Image (cartoon, rainbow, N blue to C red):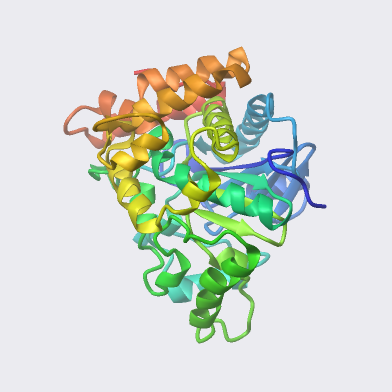
Amino acid sequence: MSYHLFEVYGIELEYMLIDSNTFKVNPIVDKLLTKKHGALTSDVSNGKIEWSNELVAHVVEIKTNGPTSAIEDLDALFAENVSEMNQLLREFDSRLLPSAAHPLMHPQTETKLWEHEHSEIYTLYNRIFDCSGHGWSNVQSMHINLPFSGDEEFGKLHAAVRLLLPIIPGLAASSPLFEGKKTGFKDARMEVYKTNQKEIPEMTGKVIPEQVFTKKEYAEVIFEPIKKQIRKYDTDNILDKHFLNSRGAIARFDRNAIEIRVIDLQEAPKADLAIAILIIESLKLLVSEELISFEDQKQWHEEDLFDIFNAVVKDAENAQIENLAFLDVFDLQGKTLVKDIWFKLYERVKSNISVRHRESIEFLLNNGSLATRILKVLGDEPSEGRIKEVYLDLADCLEQNKFFKP
């Protein structure tokens, strides 16, 4: 079935399983799904939410069980499923840990791929790219799926998404640490994302998708080069072009949706959904052409947007934007911080948002990204013990569906 713009949504959240005693990642998603389902499976339907495996055996995904228009109370629904998962995991002395990266994991020695259904796909990926790196095995994100019907709607949505992508880490960055060290990037997940498929650069491109606004253009500019490069590796033809495309937003013509992938996972579904709602309302504003015409949106080259994106990946909400044409889109002048763009967008769209979610968005805008808040409490040279302490606080926030407040 084909849905129109903003008629329904799909939200996906990824969580890592950790050992409650050692704090290490625990590759037992198969045991969790078996415990829930009664037999080994890769997907469990749990009413309006579905649980499923991911590439690595310590990451589980929970997502809307099909497209939904009921986004208002989705955070509570996700929180219920988180609670149920944690209850099941107690038998295995394990629990869920939020944020976009485990702060102490050493992927080279701790990575274990999913070994069950569809494992041949993961094995092939591992053979091509070596998935025992942070960009593969130590990443958790939220994906937002937005529908379109036909080329006209696709073009409008793709143009708007491309324009918003570079500043999303300014809201969502939550991965400032790798292997117990500050990375220098508030969104280290997205920093490694840019190069984790360097063997076939056509798969990720410049993260920001190219200027393509029809299905035919998309196939020619994005899908064909990927298919051409993957042939020598995928001799059995088991990889799907939709999954191979790894840009920060990908067109899923198999289900007529664009999937946004540059959003780090937060400390609780309450925060994830606040970010999702602000992104969706901002995209509606761009699609409406109130800020900038569709024709002008299409003119933005991915290289220019990628430059902005790089600055935001490093400094999140405190990144300084110097591209005056980009600032002009949001009716801002002079060098401006990314958080000021989000404040401006929020002012324009807040009348469309419920009071409950407004309070959440205002907390995020006033207190900064989760990465900023984590760094604030860790201090200059945090010990491993202090890092564990802070991240276990995050695990408690997840369990209670509440914000991490330094």
